[in-house]
Amino acid sequence: MTVRTAIAKIVMQEDLNFLLTNRIPRRLATRFMGWFAKIEHPLVRAPSIALWRFFSDVDMADAAARRYRSLHAAFIRDLVPGARPADPDPALLASPCDAIVGACGRIEGDRLHQIKGFPYRLRDLMGDQAETATWRDGSFVTLRLTAGMYHRFHAPHDMVVESVTYISGDTWNVNPIALKRVERLFCRNERALIAARLAGGGLPILLVPVAAILVASIRLTFLDTVRNLRVGGPRRIETAARLAKGEEMGWFEHGSTIILFVPPGFALHEDVAEGRRIRAGQPIARLPDGGTGAQPD
Image (cartoon, rainbow, N blue to C red; front, side, top):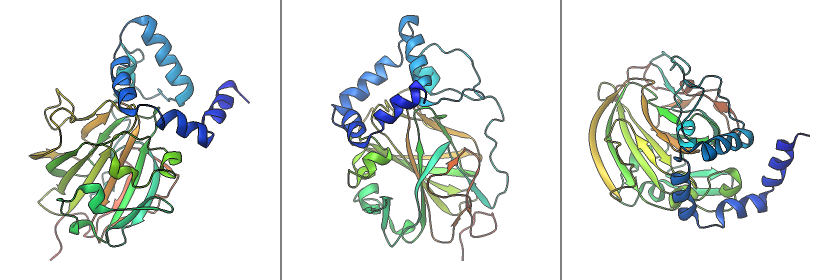
């Protein structure tokens, strides 16, 4: 057993992990991480990147750079061109990010689950004023990005983003240990509802990036991202941003979660199953209409 494996085994002991990652001042820890990760001094940068790579099982083989000015720059790294090609089949939605697949499947009315035995409702996730009828009896996929993964996310299809609704909230850890202990966790955390329609004004899809402890911000590249979404408070932002399949949408500044929602008629891809790893661009769902993205009659 290696030193890393031994330490990881201790830290992942459920009671200890939950204590270390949740029973601390979560917002304060998150703000501190946002500040600390941007320090460029070599006495901070070098050991912090080394520790991150040691404990997070980071694969930098396809990173565009080999050296970074800060831990933050390493977190949000670009990849070499072509490292995450989006599946070209127009009948398929592509995964927006590298992730471990969490809970997924059919939505039962407006009820779904964050982990077995822990249900939540669409209204609680999307806000009391949100229109949830579109997603009733549809499908969902929970995509968890770990701290060592590629943190940028991409358009799953040619589409137009119609609105972004930012909902402020807490910063609970979103790992499976916390999901088994905190009811309605995704509904408590800071999140954004990214509502889009497939190219041609057709079928709707919804992406919900959920922040977590140590996630200093959610950035969206199709909006003005000089400041992160948290600045300005809860609000709805109307937009008409056109994105090509595979085009970058934004990034997290640490690991977190994206929940993808599709309406009835879509089918999750046969390779999508809880616990599997998936990369950005790989198939995640099939369109109901042969790939045109048009609304059914």
